[in-house]
Image 1 (cartoon, rainbow, N blue to C red):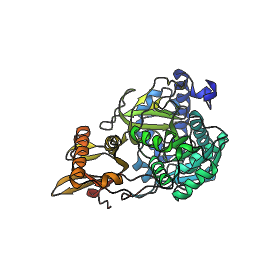
Image 2 (image 1 turned 45 degrees about the vertical axis):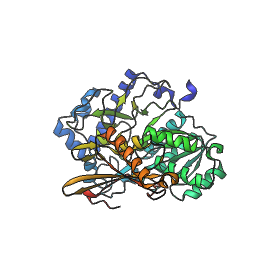
Image 3 (image 1 turned 120 degrees about the vertical axis):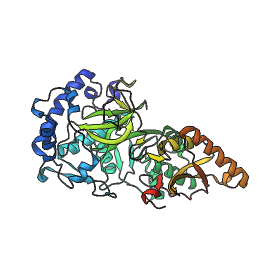
Image 4 (image 1 turned 180 degrees about the vertical axis):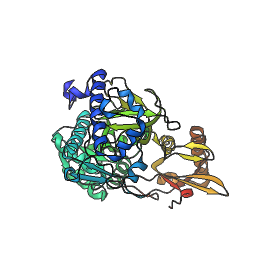
Length: 438
């Protein structure tokens, strides 16, 4: 099976050898941040951690977590472990809720990142004769340039379209013969919708694979995308804070996302008490950089909820597999004391064939009580039905949602194309309790 591996030595390394490699690389990283980042030197000293004597991987639990607030508090360059003369690139988040998250890369970091993406693409059958339409946003967002360099390293042809201008995207896809599409899953659905309106038959297109990430998406949405675009839809995962896309990715088996454990150590913790959880437990994902030079993060709390499977995959890879993240701890809605994730709503909706895959959850508080509405589009045929029939349909969806979530959700059926489409990350929730506006 060697033909399916980009780096067979590392991808199929026995777990004991992998653990030894992680231990060695982690010690080097701990020394790096201890000597070069004042934030971590204080953190280690306060916790009694001596990086020069670190020789047991389990001792990582003695090190306190790093959080997004720590990155904001050290804005802009306080967590850099290299001088600016060694930094070749800076990315950052949008900073819509405070100081943006700023991350940096050395020349070696950029090479590492490209190699991780090439590994991921290769694992799902992408080869040098493919034409990759990269519709992730370029710029400060890590998605576009992250995929770009890895695809070029693979030797494939890259079309750096970036996001937006959907009709042009479809013309390029058709005229240039794109075989791989890279974008957010919500934008893939929008491309499918616009393409159908333009009379495009995706079944006759060369497009065969989609690499989708940057937002949570369910198995039900995967089926919808695959049915509309006639492709294999692959999940890729990453965080700006850790490196960008490429921290983990599905292989062709689509039975979990392989974490690049030779470069990132992964833990699962209980977000309620921060205790480490065993393999197979659902909790919050925590990552530690093992090889990044410019800005390694130690025990970074992602807020993403998932579980880890350490069993060897049918593809032969030995690296742990993440389950598709179910959502984020900070995406969780509390409605009249009940926890609700948008992914739970999406999972129900995608099983109702009469509705379109476009929805919006609207949360408010009226007379001191939480209210929640679900706006969801239906086809022209459904919307044209009698009022009584529409009310029965709404009630049927409400019953399905209540059975699955335990929350009473008021469903409002909307005409086609009335819910705003996304050309990047989809906004699925408007929480008026927090001041959001529609």
